Image (cartoon, rainbow, N blue to C red; front, side, top):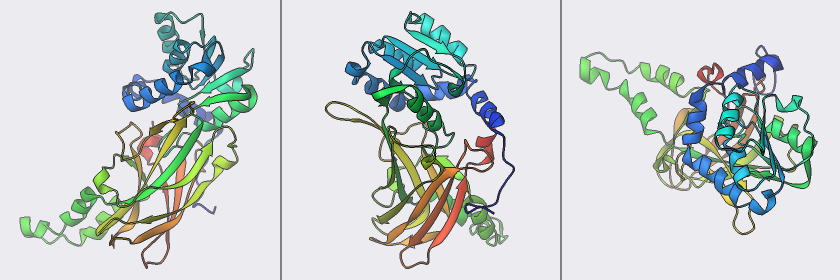
Length: 348
């Protein structure tokens, strides 16, 4: 048994890659990403505010998808853009580039990044590599590979920094579902209150639940627990991204879960641009990662929630993320729980 839990059959890397790239061959995921105006506008603005560093320069777009970021870079004056995309959506990127009359400056390369040879070093790397809970799907490893192999010294990475945050939350929907079984007798004359424990085990399980969290449900100020500098982070560090957290609750409520989200930052001469997936900001397609405790815990104002959190690759598929959390709430004894992405995400 590993430190993070029971070992499962591990997929070989080629199978992992096939599953991953195949998931990007359908229109739905690209529609979702382009339609996410918070995401797409942040990249557009982040690229245009770095025009001085892009104009007349060579850009590498890692995981280019439909090529929208490559087109933004060309619009910002890039001399040459290498748009690398391993999935079959690369065929559509070629058409989009041609439709926008940028084929003289954007070269779409349909291949795994690690398998290609570029004819030159690049001045800029751009990539939208983030997944659920930041690290699900692990495309950051490809960005690091590209950085180490092709980025010129002092080159630009867009975005250049990522931060991870955590906060305790209340979930009124879960509360209502747990209370439901106590109301059945009043409705139908059959006592089903013994179902509550079973319902709690089913609902407050070990899944990383990807769902939007409202501001009203957040019970403390956010706590930043990890920071990744894309100029220096290594693949080894991504095997265990961990940090400690300490939050103080705003008032009386019940904690059902811990909520994890991220920001990425684009450099700028004056004010850096931050793309945030926080519940305090407009919703994005990443939503938030919700980690349910085993049981709801009642808290009061200033009740402390503290512990340690670790994000690491699944032993079954290294592209998938697992999260291990130690938590202590108020005077309660410290508890631990491990979470993984549920099967419906793994089957994509």
